[in-house]
Length: 343
Image (cartoon, rainbow, N blue to C red; front, side, top):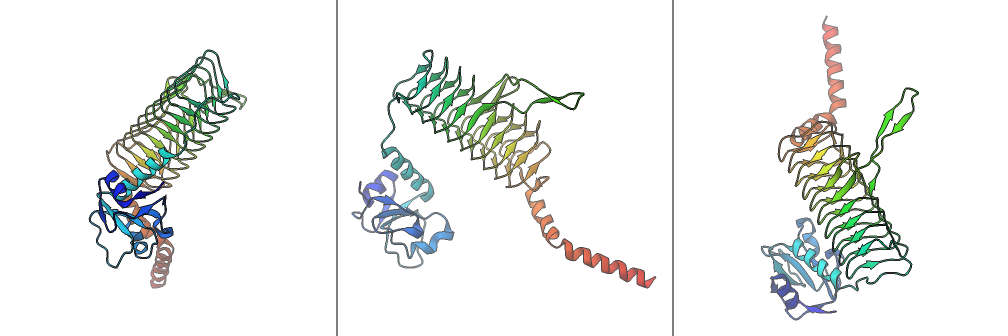
């Protein structure tokens, strides 16, 4: 489908700077733009591309002031990044939607399936499960007994949800994620063996949670591992038993949260962050990538970096000296030799 600059501007509540009748039929990166495509500019580091792009339309911030001539028509909006995200969402919604239940799916007679649900081939839905309206369950997904899934939730191919777990409304769980696997609980024995501790709890995902591909969330030993409303977890993350993650917290890939740690709301953790068990992390805490947290954080809004993690600004100051450590050691050794010579 083709849309004119004016139609797009009206949808985004923006203004056209250029030809309002020029039309586009696809989206593109600004550095790869071609005639008939729409792109956006929000990061100043990419400004150089707007002067050379072949894209027909570019969404920019309202206060953008070009330093050179631009051939593309501009659509000015308060926030170019959010406006482009809105267009991507509209584009996604315009694509053909999966519908219907495959005859190759296995659904227990005791399961309750809502209206307008898509269930793909070789999906398995166990006894006493509840699947809400407008859900999409892609092929090879397994939902064990007594699982409840809210409305408008999407489970991509190969998701595994263990028994008794609860998934909220408007959640997205990407391919290969495992929800409700056993927590890592073993009691050491006198013969140096380990006795497995049964994990009889579950996992609860509240509404609007997104779980990345191949992320694993363990069930609680007792009670629930809880991922609260609006949490976004990247790919390849490990969340251990009895962890609680507060509302709207985001965690990047390859991070690990050990058992019984409580994470506050609106936190942001970079990739490969590690947090040991039984800690408490305050609201709005930010942790830089590859940091290791070994003690609780009580300060709201704290910014941490390093392993062990501490105040990010102090870490960055310390790192300046760390990079010079070799030369500093040599200087100290030279001074020691000089003092010995004087003796």
